Length: 220
Image (cartoon, rainbow, N blue to C red; front, side):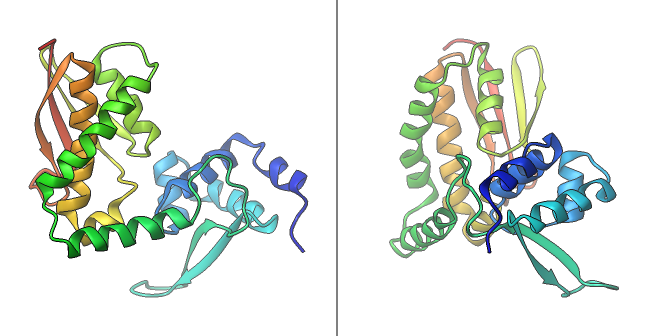
């Protein structure tokens, strides 16, 4: 029998459990305890009882991965099918994204076409955004909201933003040209719409220094 909704919400009332839940909701694939702990800068022994608490009330499900590991099998956690959405994307979205990517690939769409297709969305995101501050701050916050966990290195006339986590990595590994092209278009459209920066280089997953963007600062 599913746990009462009050029990679910009480379980998420703890800040650490909520952060863990958010991390799992953003991830396109199940995560191990060590992965969650590393992302949130916590000790695995701190994370483990929170995972078990959320599993007990029906928020999480666990799969066992014994492939390639020495010792006991590794547990991987993901949101339970009937867990409350709390504004996160529904489980059908990754499936839809995968099907659309296969369709785009079968149609022979290029990376350049993916970039162009995503520019309008990036510009729309910038126009809706109420974030204050210069381009690099606004873009950093936008990328954070999408789950990229960006880290910026700011110089007097330029900024390099690294994507320390890619919420689309599983899809990008299957088709980096299209997925990284869409990400590039989002970033370029966002920066262009802001008007106080210019994307000078975007490094996708297969680049020698992958997953980062370089932006020249200043109004055009």
